[in-house]
Image (cartoon, rainbow, N blue to C red; front, side, top):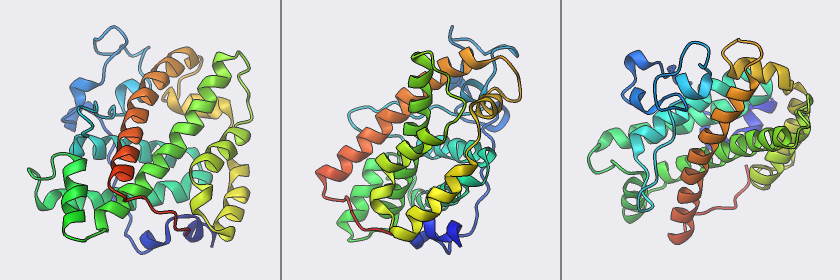
Amino acid sequence: MCYSVITNSKHSGCPRVSVLSASKGNNPFADKMSAPNGGIPSEEEKNFFNSVQIPFPEVIDGKIDTLQFLESSKGVASLIDKFGKVFGPVKYDMTGNIEKLTQRYDTNKDKHMYLNNMILSEKELGGNYATDALLWLRRALHFIHKFFHCILEDSRQGKKSEDLIPFLKKAYKETLEAYHGWMAQKCFGLLSRMCPSRSELMRTLALGRENREEAVLREMAIFLQGLDSNIQAIIQLYLENDLESNAKV
């Protein structure tokens, strides 16, 4: 079926993992979510990006905090699960890779405090378990980043296109298509027709509220900046250490 083909085949046997909502009650990174003025967002201001999604960690000297990165990635996976079947394969692939990275992190939390250390220590040992998982997780996050970026740019240009399928296809072409075989690409083409409309997406990001687009887009822009810095740092890590792979699935 399309779902098993479009995902990274190496993860097709992975069990589904529970992706918890990043609610402030049980979230060690709750203090990192705030309103534009630095305080706690009011009920009116609340949206996915400032009250559910944990921001991606600040990249310091090229290093990424492993735990916060994984928690942030779980938030993205939980969000795209609400977008319908078109994102199902991406969500399934992401959760499998998050679980793999979490397993590796748990073997030595101090040593693996930073993603960089975890990946490089595995390379020294000749392994590829976490390295492959992070490679595919980065690609999935890059896909989501490109999709949201297209929506943001469309809004900045005053277009506010209701049909998001062209943005989804553009994001796919620039991030995942090169690593998918013919069958996976065809499956994506079919699934892309089920992409949610702009109105549906904005309502989801506004946690079911209407007429919150301006606030959602403002927080989306902030979120994308943090996500992009993480993506670029991981790309740099892989390029510098010859860890990239152009293999297709």
